[in-house]
Picture (cartoon, rainbow, N blue to C red):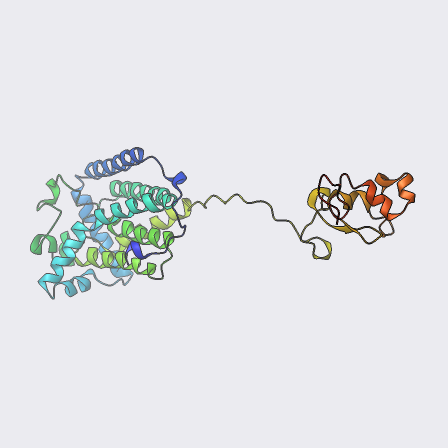
Length: 336
């Protein structure tokens, strides 16, 4: 499943599509800070967040979605398993997305620009939803009866008092950017590579979904909403096609399979036969033996005169100074 074993879409990265590194670093850092400060601005809506959490829980039961407790029950069978799930939730989200963008920037510049735009649009839409729809996670909802696995088993990225947590907004469960970013990482790598194993990247969002639900940090609907937002972003920002390679126009087959759709020029070196049977090439073919309207070959006006009456030999001698072939002038080559 490693990137080094994938077969690239292009043999070499198109460096013309790679944006300046410093500009990209500043842009990504700015987007990240805007997101973090935006989440902080959504703090303070505790009562509204719990009220909407109850509504989401009831809606999931009305839709007959599987209970989040069923997934958590699987994790709680072993302490090492739930610890691994907490570690995955805390340590994989940001590093995996960062490595994904770094690899695309270096190896697939066009895919990088496309992926960065999609992720930025998805994150902006999620931030707007965090502000408009504060939501307490299921681990805080008493009716759910779930365990806060991060606090009980560790590790966790959240403080023990959600209302005063200055590091993260714990009331921003809807939608789940853990799931959204993981799906985009899988989509981006599947699109940018051609390995037969590239579909295994779908394991990343699948494991992420089970982790965020099993640790009681998100509802099923959090994942459904973020996938819908990602689908809209992918529809808006389409992957640009690579620049076509400059090649000459292909000629159409001419009559009688000549392989060309236009008349052969005089300098093309097409050989012809003079009425006397002597082959003449190059400009002589055009000058000496044009076709008449009836289709037979006859001497052109270039050989009219006294030598024209002498027959084919005279015509060939007249053209010897400027023709190649058996009647070539001694300056151009000995006559055969």
